[in-house]
Amino acid sequence: MKFVPILFLITLMACQSQSQDKKTQAKDQYFFALYHRYIVDSDESKTEFLSTKGASLTTAQPHSFEDGVFFNGGVMEAKESKNALPAKYTVYHRDGFPAKVEVKIKDVLDFSVPAPLFKGFVAKKEKDLISINAKTPLGKNDHLILLLIDKNGKDVRKEIQGPTQLPYKFSVRDQNLTFPASISAIYQQKFEYKEKNVNMSVLLEYYAPDIQLTTKN
Image (cartoon, rainbow, N blue to C red):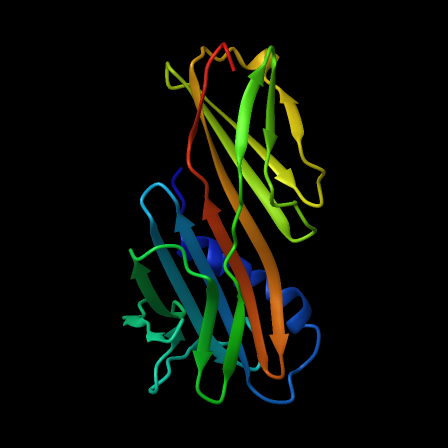
């Protein structure tokens, strides 16, 4: 499943302006966006961090940090900012599932949360229904994206917004899918983080292993 994180992060940052522009800020604010994903099948993670600073989001300018931006104790790579886009920092890992998502900037930001984990994801076909379940409950900040692709390449996308009770079933009767098919799941946590003069949009993702669905399961 393809995803364009930087465009999505800029959109998240734009949403902050709805509240920030209602009043003049007493001092400059930091406007950050954090994106992190872990893909089980390739055992790799990617983290991106965008940074601007200003009186409001609409007037904020790209802002970089001389002392660096740190992810889980390691320095993130600074990318060149072009066309007034936010300053960008990235890091890639191929060393297993991270226990936490921690971003630190000296005297500015000290953020840490458990890494998202969609544990025990299972799926099966029950006649015209697809049934999914997991050991991880879907809370109010959680979002699940499901993508079914049949043997002919036809795809069906299903989005589930938390809080939602699992197991969860949905019909594919009118989708004309030809089985066997695969089902992919992206577990998302989306929320806003605010502290002092820091405003940060956070998107954390966990790409669960694909599951094959046949006419027998």
